[in-house]
Image (tube, rainbow, N blue to C red; front, top):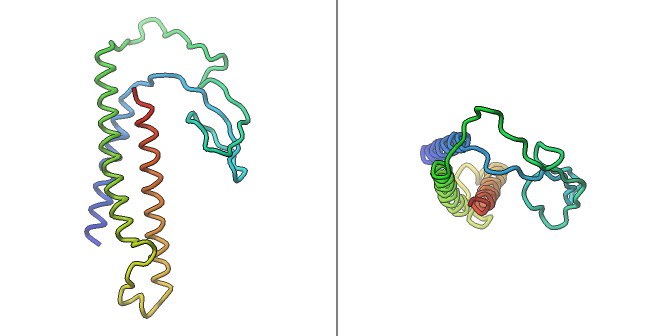
Length: 160
């Protein structure tokens, strides 16, 4: 129990730091935001390449209807290339650290899940539903960490 609480706390701290660091970074480009229909019929808005089987409904420049970038207002602060590179490097480091943490958590979740057949705890032997509930929670944790790892890898691939 204490181990899972510490794992949760450390994960939360890493995510909070990553979020704060990314909020400090300026946007590096305007991306097209596209509207897709996924395989299940759900509408999805994204600037990332779609999954196979998604139908493209529309696509437009992120925030601008023409795709042209609006000029910066007079007196708007500019960031020199070396400062931006430092920020990009920091973002890449934060994402890499978060990926390493998620991969570790995924390995731990897979170990606990034991391919869908973890040993039953003593109280679960008396009440089979408790075992089924724990098994569902363990599978959900594996799925969550798999999705997080995939998303972080995609995000890292987009960094310059």
